[in-house]
Length: 227
View 1: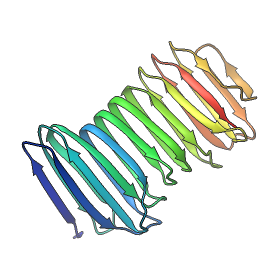
View 2: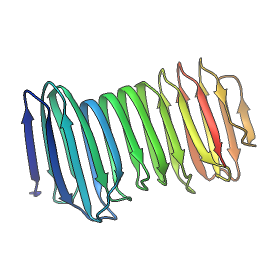
View 3: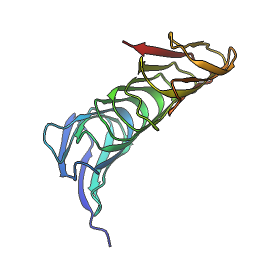
View 4: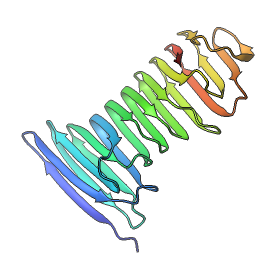
């Protein structure tokens, strides 16, 4: 049977703060967050081997469960109705799985794999050095700025929002981009094109070692070259 460490806070009226710290293995730490309404912000931890969770419950009737299983994975889940804003610090190589139904998700200066999903709101990744990135917003913008690692996979999707990717000028990647109504701006990268239409581009920059997939149904796609 797995050992589970649990911390729970229930909130009914008035703003309240939830604080929890978990000890983790810095190189293999994992974090999963499920929020209903509000924000999830994840940044690097100042102390090695710690995941620190601060949540501000702004209104409504919500319950926060924070658990850690025997393998060290930390899971935070909000149930009930109301707004909760998370500020979380993790070891830089932590793997993240983030879900929010309405609000915003931001991840800054981390190097682990990142998966983020939101129904109504924006996703912003800045300064990442991750081997695998997945972001999907139904109604909102998705933006990525960071390194592109060899054999890395980077998927940014929004049904009705704008998709922005800012990559180093020397990034080595294969691009697949599709925008069915909003158009595309490929930002000055000199690429070898395999397919190029108003709605679909397949191309390579360098040897095409990493995979970059950008998709939107109703919005636009913008690829920027970082100096």
